[in-house]
Amino acid sequence: MYLQQYSLSEPPFTLTPDTDFFFNYRSHQEALNVLLVALQGGEGFIKVTGEVGTGKTLICRQLLKLLDDNYVTAYIPNPFLNPTALRMALAEELGISFARNIGQHRLLQLITERLLELYAKGKRVVFLLDEAQSIPDDSLEALRLLTNLETEKSKLLQVVLFGQPELDVRLAPRHFRQLKQRIVFSYQLVPLSRRAVSEYVHHRLNIAGYRGPALFSAGAIRRLHRSSRGIPRLVNLICHKSLMAAYGSGSAVIKCSHVARAARDTEDVTVHRSRWLTVASGVAGLLALTSAGLLYAYGL
Image (cartoon, one colour):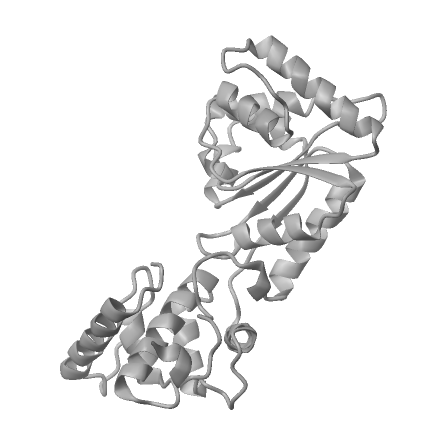
């Protein structure tokens, strides 16, 4: 509904990890640089961690987009798999045909043959697992054993783990020390600063076609940063609902009050209450958001 009101060609704050909207924030760019350098080195595991909503999946997809034809990638978005299913998923990603009742020794043999075939062609094979904190313990060990596949001079398989901070807790016990010692590079994502939130919002609006003056007031940006704690996913949610609230009130600019209403209608945000924010305005804001939401599907 608000696209025409604010001269937008597409929704700027969707939750889908769209690489067209990738924001070159320092933390995200550093993570990508670490990944690219590590993959060029060709050794062991690489780990990227970050709180929920900090952009791990988007970085993963951006990495897939940046890797050239010298790389063959296998991507598992949900690795909550037992060891057998994990090996089968890798085999399928590598284009290996096999019977569903195949023995595990034979499956591992086929994976090894495929990796050697790709190595002979000068290809590097990268196995990327998102939501890695959910990998079962026995599957983590199976993953480590897969990285034992190597020639005299090079690993046949590199593994990149993207996970929440719980992944570090999972790997802390002593029985995972062999896997931890194989993590050659590790990077932790951090939330956006207030300045970065402003640049992030402007960047996404610009990609979505907005060419006018600043759409979010300075006060709105301050409130947005405090409420979202700089977490990109929450920034997107609050911005989308703020645009809905501003559209509902006929405002040409997104103000602090619109962001405050949107924040109160969003889970896991830091809510700041002010004297001027009355109960009546709060109820009106929620009604505006609810009414607009019924008429506009935004994929939450």
